[in-house]
Amino acid sequence: ERVQSHGATRSTVYLRCGLQVDLRVLRPESFGAALHYFTGSKAHNIAMDVGTGLAYVCGTNNGTYVVDVATDPVNPIQLYRLTSPYIHDLSVAGGYGYFADLNGNNFQVYDVTTLPTSLTRLASVAVGAGIYCHATWPTRDGGLCVSTNEASGGPVRVWDVSNKRFPVSLANYSAGPSNAIPHNPFVKDRVLH
Image (cartoon, rainbow, N blue to C red):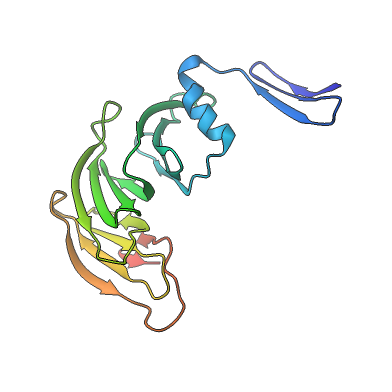
């Protein structure tokens, strides 16, 4: 029916039936990342590793994706896809990924410096029966990491991750009988928010 906008790599048109269609021209190697982006696979989170320009897309129904968004932001390139386990949330800092394996109830540590060929799991620690590892966040120095359980009352767990192969649970905090649900932790200057 009509062209709304057009450019070198994208256009928006309206069909006679009233449907808006967004068109995009991509390099073949960008197809996987673009398909994921444009189909909205219901990712729970996107964690950015600002130092490397890599985006980690997790909590999807078909894997955890590592995408290079720095080299060509207009045409991001999928570098890696972790199909199992289901990673609900994660954070990345200092060459390590702190992954929340929700279905397996595990807190996991990965070496992410092995990308784009692989993600190397260094540790997988059970968080306890009936406790779901929902989200993670490390301290700036990489010595501690916090994980949360998205359930009424918590708990919030603090891990010593100074030895990445052997994380140690240091403390648990529970909101007690309240209905407070710890969701996504954020640590700044060793203060948990």
